[in-house]
Image (tube, one colour):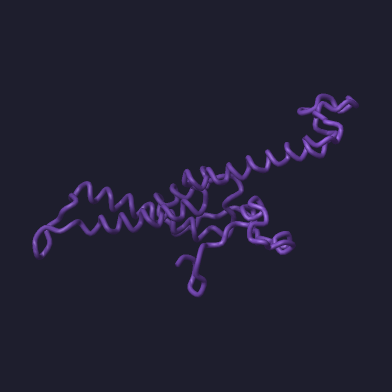
Length: 185
């Protein structure tokens, strides 16, 4: 079960992905009427973050894919910055103290290893959600490529007088598209 309580199954896909896939869910006109809420503005760094967390925040904002993050992602970015700083601190302390420490009943795994692993899982999930993982970046690029391919295909099929890259100059009355005179092969 994924998602939120009371809703089982897969997490919902973004509307752009649904439209690219076509009408696989047989939604018909409902898919055309669907609107995704859009927030405006850029995220602002909270003042209570430490210097390391603020540096992480600035790094994420600078390297995030264009137009992915907006004002409502402040809390998500805060959780990312805090957990990444926590993971780095735990890992550096583990490097100093070792993976195994002395406990009341003998040698045990350093508790900071669990903290680092939990923080790494949170960071990985958030990075995947906001397009900072290689797979999520590939999905974003793939959507843009599909849009450009659709535009070229539509220009080829329906003809576009303004498109001079495929057919030569717009003033040329003769089309360079192959024709078979309406005959079926």
